[in-house]
Image (cartoon, rainbow, N blue to C red; front, top):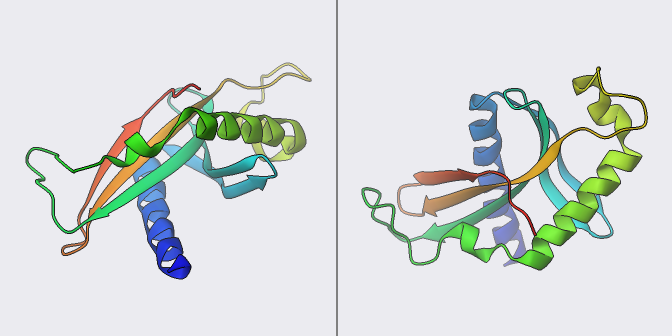
Length: 143
């Protein structure tokens, strides 16, 4: 059961990565772990010039109405305040302990300062019968 969920999660993360790359994001790393939690994707948004901590949520359905974008429970409805707080704490750890991974994107940043950053959510609803996915990108989530 766990392997099955992991495979589905990896599939959804792959969809999210492709989606973000098409929106001109640069992927810095995936599955960044710290004792407080995990960040699915850390990316650089070239348009906004911000570091983005991305949570990927997915739901799998037998079928859904693609025309009306209706699903029984939307993937983004499963994100709660404690989860956002974990992402924020893990994000601060990344900023403090991994500067070599993000500093090259912020060359004009004063020394000993941090870049602008935000938390985004990529919601992936997948229809199991066809493999088609609905993707929603929600920016600037806060706890």
